[in-house]
Length: 325
Image (tube, rainbow, N blue to C red; front, side, top):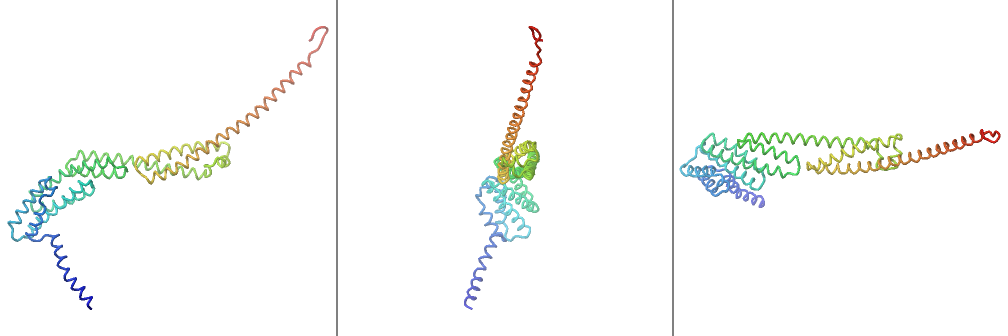
């Protein structure tokens, strides 16, 4: 019972603290908004984009002259406050190089400016001018980050965001240029992925037919016929070159997982290529020996035939008188 009472007292004591925190997060009265806007003084984002400083100053003056806020006044002040808070976050993320997060908060700022426009056109116009300039700087930062990206998927995403930022900065030509670049690089990237897939499939098919080709003896013994070794060697040369090219593409596009898998496959196809090259050479040497033996036998028979012929010619000579006929 004592424990329950303590918990109940603690809950009652804590309730005003949470209520106060909620009130601080969501200003309600003119005094609340006055404190909010006054605390924003000296914010770096508003000093650099002074349109927001103008809005802040106007808001401070407005709440000082207003005793009680009606619904429209409260909605206007809240839209202005929310836009300024979102813009400050967008600015700080951009300063830290977190451009994707910055773009998200900049888009959130746009949404709050649209709300503000329903109540105060002048302030909304000022805020929109500031955000438009901010988008241009953000686009430049996104492009720099895209150029530094090591993985093509990351680069394509950043270039797409760059195009979005330029579009929101009312720079359609730049936006169109980057959208075209994204399309071209996406096509090249997808072609590279297809090349990797084809190389892996061809290698798998080759080893299905020539599972022991990494061993010289097995490569020779496993050939379906005498010419099979040469055919397999020609095939593995094509497959090995394709895998090496696919591996280079994976490295170029920063695909570490694909590069590692293709590196392993490249080692296997290279080993098979070497084994089949040796096997082919062995077959050639073997055929050379056989041809040499056959040639020796044939030449021996030719020489024997020639000697027999010569002896026959000598035996056919007839002696008549003092001369030979």
